[in-house]
Amino acid sequence: MAFTKKQRELCAKILDEVYTNGAISRIDIANKTKITPATVSSLTSQMVEDGLLYEAGETFDKKNKAGRKKILLSVCHDHSYFIGAEISERYYTFSLTDNLGKIISQVAYPVENNAIHLTSECFIDKLQEFLLASPVTVQAIGVALPGHFNYIKADQILTNNPLWQNFSLDLISDAFDLPVFFSNNVNCMALSEKLYSPDKEDNFLFFNLSRGIYCSYVHCGEIFCKQNFLVGEIGHTSVSLQGNLCECGKRGCLQTYASETWLLKKAALLFESSTETFLRQLATEPKDITLQTLLKAYRLGDTGVVHLLDIAINYIALALLNMTMILDSSKVFIRGELFNEPMIKEQLLSLLSYESSLSSMTSTTKFIVKDFDIYTGSIGATALALNKTLLNKF
Image 1 (spheres, rainbow, N blue to C red):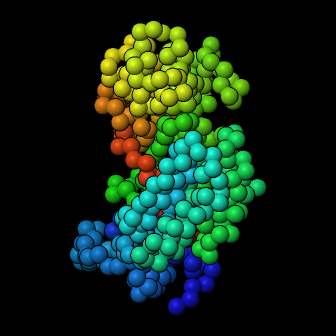
Image 2: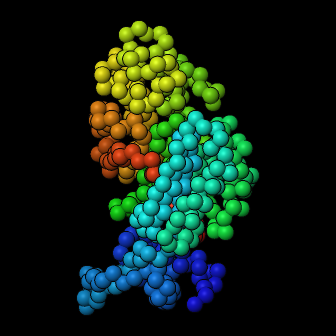
């Protein structure tokens, strides 16, 4: 059966409720979406026939004195498949998932410090290889970007990083017969929490620390203010008016204390200025220092490195606590390779466990440090493709 444009919109709205709530009855869908019960029944019956939804069982309606049973609907996991890709300075990662986020296959291609590979053409070649190796038919491709997707001039990644200024998104789209969608990588990660997590939340934050710092906000199940590129740039909120001059033109941005880029920059200065730092035994010269080098020095008790990371964690905790006072969020997901270090993770969570006298006025926010995985962005990109294709959103 071919749906009309209006019916497709209603189907997307219904499907979003099933994704958001898990198993849910037709009458509950009607109540939540304000779509008439008859229309919900008709459209969901067709979606069951098409293999997108299935009847997951029955439950009693406690409000109905007659004890009438509700038929619960859930999403079929193998209805469609999506490829997600993340572009970064360190690697291209690719993930193939079904429409519930189950991973079918994954591949990573290191590209760090190799400008030859940091091109649209190289990315296309690797993505085509991954697509050709797919054991299933792929419906759409999502791409997580190291910056924002410019909706006005859609061929560009909106970023101040010169590496991506000539990275053509049109070239990527034109290379495939499938629909290709683009978005900021952290927004993609937040979408995967919304669509794939077993514990659904309407309002939450996704904080990502890497070479830069960004925080995505999901409000009422939607990415908040996704076309205003300043929203979410928590790395450029000032935490010290007397701090270092940031590349954005302000002083004391969180970025200058806690981003991987600035931590490595300060570690290089420590290498050059201190004769006692362990960094001199762990690296031949400043440019060889990596985040792993920094963490090794931290575990060895290097005074300068410990001080550097203590300041970073304190400012991160301060920024996150301030955000939860402003934004309605039941959970805050925290991702970053830095937090793989148990002592740093424990220190951060200890700082975030602070409860003010105002806590009794509202529910407490739960802070969750995610295990670092280089595929988080590409899995998020599959959620972007799903969101655009099945839910007709974003």
